[in-house]
Figure (cartoon, rainbow, N blue to C red):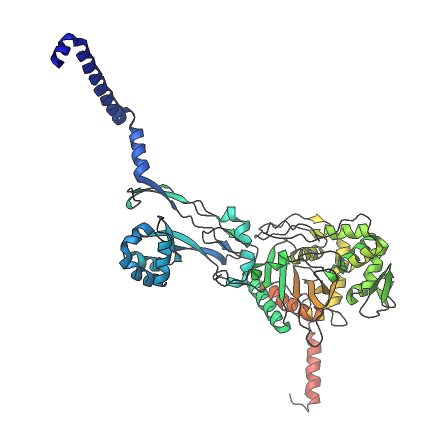
Length: 583
């Protein structure tokens, strides 16, 4: 029947043969096309099933102090990971793996069972290369190692609040590490490898993109001064049983932050039992009413107006001054004072009279120009700008309380910047957390003569003859500053009766200021009934400033006058005669 049909319909047979020939020709052509003309398609499909790109970790940039001392370095570590599906087939090896990792076998087994349906889980991160090698040498199926970098902080808790730290993925999470993340972070590279369908590494083929290390960063911090500030601040907290404290030191001529210490602090190399409250950089984040520390700027405003001179007399009797319903009080009745005496005795009545005479608008402008309540421009994560209420129409009582440091809030860094303006003879330069190689251009915000006059007034505060800050003296140097003792505010409004902040803000040497330093002690326990800034904070300033001036080779400006040779000979002869001719 079929042969008959073929004989009857020969065109059908030829059609089938033609179709078969066409199909064979098409297949042959596609084979030739894929192997000769379109090789990339087959190669791409094959590569997609076997070639993989794995990242090459990048070395994070080095952070140093201004003298090149390392503050943050990256070290190579090994991270171990596992494929739970493969590990399930080697249960007999789990106890050996747990023992090498230093974990409980039951805990490891529980983790593997929990991830049994996955193909990836971390075993441990941040091992030393030697520790990682000891695990990989076991050759347990499903256990693999990768290379990473871990951040190490040589100065530990001393620079923790400034430098900050990175997370487990080497990303900045606090401090400079976060603020300069784009600068410090490197660009990971790529390595091409050959894997089978189960993801097992068969061959390491080539590096397709080299890792690019992050850029190094030199901070303005001087590690020598940072250690000094850290030690003295810690000692003060222990001595006075205080809750917390901060210290900021800047170079008044360049605006560089040379030291920034906070207590309590933490160790960024070991954060297992870290209390989050210890991570707060109080010098930049905590705001407070500065109290008497703003009085020098009120006096500068008065001098700048031309209505006052250093010898101008102000009557502070009888020790209080009624402004509306508010009574401005001094600690004592200081009587009649000149402007210098107002600063030396820290008279609230005196500065209130000056502020009310000049006016609230000018007071607001002066405080704003020296940087109080303004952004410092440091770009530090979480930094606050404080509060300087906008001047519209201040009531007299608002102007009066503002003049002695209440009704506004600042940070320790802002206060240091303001005193830096005084030390730089009225020239305001921007603050910097990185080293500056060329002195920046500033803006003249206070008259040079006025700034010099205020500096000489601040020197009398530290004078042992009746000054409130005499404990801040530094042998061999003229030092100036201002004490402050501020009642802390209540959560619901008003002020605490027995909770204070003790403050000292100062400069040295007064003849040609180089350094400004702010010390804040939060809630000191009264010792001998004393909790004032001149008793609690001023000694910290004196000790830190004495060490800083020596370390920075600042020439003394208050050495005893040399004794003439003839006078020395005369004194020696008199001594010999007084002892019967014997020494």
